[in-house]
Amino acid sequence: MLKMLPKAHITIAAAATVVVTAAILMSPSADVEAKRMSYTLDLEQGETSQIISKKPQQSPEASPAKAVAKAQSEPASQVPVEATLEQTPRIDWQTFDIKSGDTLSSLFKKAGFNDGIMLSVIHGKGEADKLQRLYAGETIRFATTKEGKLAAVELQRNLLETLKIEKQDGTFEGQTQMREPEPKPAFASGTIDGSLYLSAREAGLNDRLTMKLAGIFGWDIDFVYDVRKGDQFEVVYEELYLDGEKFSTGRILSARFVNRGEENIALLYTDSNGESDYYTPDGKSMRKAFLRTPISARISSSFNLQRRHPVLDVVRPHEGTDYAAPTGSPIKAAGNGRVQFSGWKGGYGRTVVLKHGDNITTLYAHMSRIGKSMKTGTRVKQGETIGYVGSSGMVTGAHLHYEFRVNGSPRNSRTVKLPDAQPIPSSEIARFKKLTTRQVAQFDAFRSNYQHLALASED
Image (cartoon, rainbow, N blue to C red; front, side, top):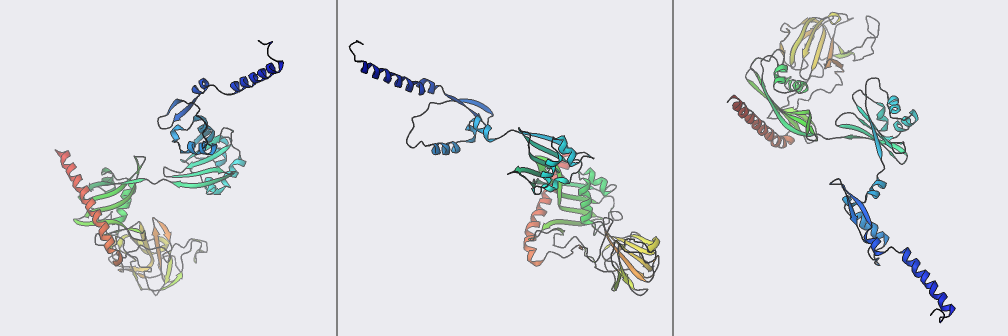
């Protein structure tokens, strides 16, 4: 048969055979295509599964661009593992608890980075420079790429505040992130048996809330002299939660204190300008105003923490304001309060110290004489005469030395922001009534539940 065919025909047939064979070898068979498999990671279930696919016929519209668009529209749970790994480079985190004596340099070295890297971080953009302020008890984390390069630094100040610094386009950029806790109202009630402090602890209030409670009512109630056994208090306050767990307490929302049978109620109100303060149910401020000056006289020496003393000739802080006035001029109480001290006080001479709410005290020194009723523990009203100008103590002439202190620290009485005693303005009354009506209803509901629980526990 072969002999019957011309040699040219045999050559052409052989060539065709080679072409067909090559085409078959270069094209995957249907069997091979049927068994092609890929793996997908179900991100929601955390499972890996096989997907067996057969290569579809290439349609005219199945362009590479449309294939990419289709892949982007598929659910994240069906993204191939190999693609996910390529998009998310591996990051290793190192965490260190900051202890006393630690420095930023020593912490970077522990993480494997030199001072040059540290400087590039703190000289970065945004709030990156805040990384220099470290305190014991904070936590710092370093993120390292698989190549050993620094990718990010996180400084957790507390549960709510974290400084995050990330490398972007070759530069480190920092930003402070604050978490917002979820506030939930809580209720505490107690009866004074010994002191407010002990009774509040038994009722479940922490020290911060107890001090705040005393500060709210401190303008009208002296918690040293006025409180009696049998006095009662009720407080609605915020408990703060993060991720469903309680971690702290927030503001006092409303409070009631019965002192010697007299009821005092305070409600927290935030006005339309965002300013918050405590008021009585009828809109009066719980705070009481201060007189800016306790005497009508000229200033002879201003508040100056670097002043040279006129008698001792040494630099000694002048922690008050001096008012020059004739001997015997009356001195008025700057605000409602209680006499904390009355008598001779070293270089101050004859002195009266008044204690007010919010841990504020005022001092009046160098008197020629002290008012007869100014005994320790006596309640004093704003504008009441507490003594008379003189030159007792270490002075060069008659004047009043007046000090204004907050938590024991001196403040310039001429510039310090004085408590605002203004009532709710008429423009806010309708809004105030609407919001505080809800607060009172909430208060009554808590009290009712508390009383039912108390009765149930007795049974």
